[in-house]
Amino acid sequence: MKFRVKLFLFGSLSAAFIALQWSGPTFREESLKGMRVLVTGASTGIGEQVAYHYARMGAQIVITARREHVLKEVVKKCLDLGAQKALYIAADMAEMADAERVVEFAKEQLHELDYVVLNHIGPSPYGMWDADVDHVKWLMQVNFHSYVKMAVKALPVLEKTNGSLIVVSSLYGKMCLPFGLPYAATKFALNGFFGSLQHDLAMKHSNVSVTICTLGLIDTESAMEKIKGYIDMPAYPAHEAAYQIIKAGALRESEAFYPWYTFYASLFRDWFPYHRDQVIRKVYKYQP
Ligand code: NDP
Image (cartoon, rainbow, N blue to C red; front, side, top):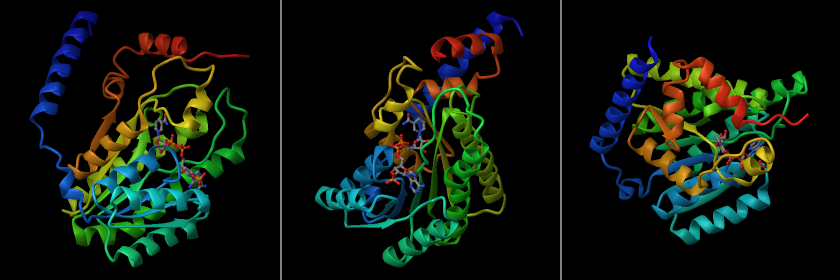
């Protein structure tokens, strides 16, 4: 296809996207009052901000991560912000029994579940891949297998409440980028699995909605630390990313993108392969 034709289509699709954004259903924070929510990876970063937004909106929340003392503090703040209920359970998502235990705990404590936000990620090195295959296997357990395990446990519960499963993913799960190979593998796996699950659920007329959130660079402590010296681009605020995740879940959107460029990058990733790769290799810097 000629470059000009591609540009014209790019412009038209952008206009259509903006029009869609303006004409879509509106999000009402009040609709989340009293909702029963489970958030993973909520001791810090985006998950912590997700918990605070739900708390401010008057939800009932169970949060989880590994560090108990940090979770305790987050729960305290959630209650101060207005959560109807806030509880924590410490768990290691590398252990499938823990993943199962977390959903069981949330179900028992909140009686039902309306939203399950799968957000946690295990720490992973950033830079040229060091050929550590065991790390890839471990990260798959934490970032992918535990998501599947939790979804399996949560789906029958969400079915009863017309509930929603929200999966936090990344541009790394949509296009191939350097320096985060094990992480990218886990995010592509998530997108493949939960994207296909959306079809299965729709075809059997399930009540459960699945929202996959594609995020770009967000200013969490761990992300900022990792990319230092490798990428020079703006990072967007974690509290805004968290708000967009909650909003997309409440509106039962199948996909959500934050910030804006993640939508275009995902949409046009295969249109200009040469230019795409040139831009990627300029934005990401290799330091031998
Ligand atoms: P953080 O590294 O800030 O937080 C990760 C969370 O996961 C923490 O609460 C951590 O708590 C928990 N965690 C880590 N290991 C385990 C484990 N083995 N078992 C259970 N919990 C664990 O991540 P971000 O907030 O930056 O990212 C959140 C989500 O957003 C992720 O899915 C990520 O892929 C996505 N995203 C983030 C981007 C960014 O730039 N920040 C960009 C694109 C996507 P603890 O240590 O207490 O266990």
